[in-house]
Image (cartoon, rainbow, N blue to C red):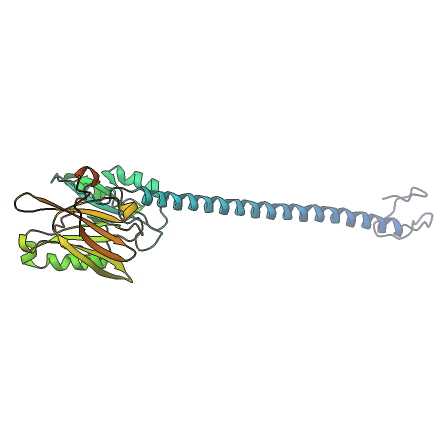
Length: 310
């Protein structure tokens, strides 16, 4: 550092030039001010960069949340569409080499459609009567599979990280299972005409009704109908043991029950459930089998139905 007046060298920290006596303090102060202003500018730039980074993170977070919300809405709409478009409630092949398996996903599995595609690799997809399982975080898919493939399905699909549980037959609630298991524990019922069951949403309100066909003898054979309300199975009524068809389930909230007498004569009944009122009425007008709709095949439980974990 040199004096601006005489050019003599000035030692660091000197306030006056030792040669000419010129004061140099002011310059040092100016240099300090310049350094301070420089750091102030750097701090301001650094602060602005931090603000911009925080804003970018917030924008990205909000965008991802909106995208997830949109995906959830699409998934919800997809599930609702599956329910609304479902026209096949309960299918059990007459082929003894096939059986029904219901696969339940873990909580928050990828997507319903993706889970359906996964399960369909192991059997024919069936529109399930109950989409949700206990809560809305799980998906339920039923497939028709070959009995010879069951061990492989349990080993491969059962160990898939998307699968929570595999159930034999359709998924139904515990209250319905209690009714079915009571009949299975009755030797006269079990050794009589046999026990068959199915589930179908008769009045299209999102709650599936239980159809139970059984009898110790042909004279005592009945078809019973139950619904589920306030965590209880409530019997709606019973009718003759016959063949069930969908009927106009979405428009008139009814099924068709066709009973064949010993002489071969058929009687057609409307099974109506609407506005919490249930009735079985003989239909002598709409008796054309072409108008009955899809046949509802009932499932034969081979053993007691296991209860779901609480």
